[in-house]
Amino acid sequence: MEKITKDFYGELYGHKDISEEALTKVMEDVPAISTNNMNEELRKEITEKKLFQRVKAIAKGKAPENDGIPMELFHSMWSTIDKDFYRMIRKNIEEKQIHLGVTKGLIYLMPKDGDVKDLKYWRPITLLTVT
View 1 (cartoon, helix red, strand yellow):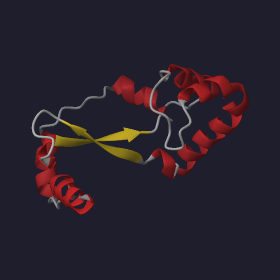
View 2: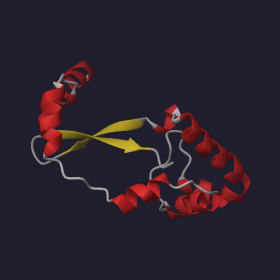
View 3: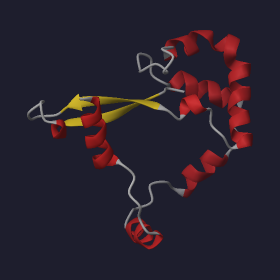
View 4: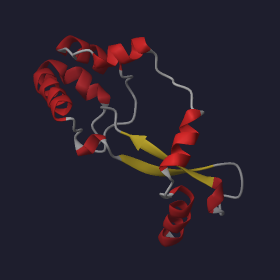
C-alpha cells in the first residue's frame, strides 16, 4: 500500500522539467503580491524587540514543531531563550541559511469528498513548523 501511495503522489506532484522560456512565460501572468513598502519592511534590520513581537503574535494552540514543542513553551520561556533565539535568527540571516528543521514538514493525507478507497480522493497537506 505504501508503494502504491508513493507512486501515485510521486507522479501527481513529482518534479517535472520545465524550460526557462516556459517558466518565464507563465510568470509573466502572475501578479506581484508584495508592494515596495512590504519589501522595505522585509529588508529592515531585525531587532530583539521586533522578534519578541513576532513570536508573541504566533497564535497559541497551533501545530508544534516536529519535536512536539508547542508555541506556548516559547511564549512562557521567552525571557530565558530570547538571547539565544535572537542569535540563531541573526546567524541564519548572516549566513543566508535556515536550520534544516525549519525547512521540513510532515505530509498528511486528508480525505476529500468521494470514494476514500480511491487515492485520487485524498490530498496531501504539509504541516509546517511554527518557528
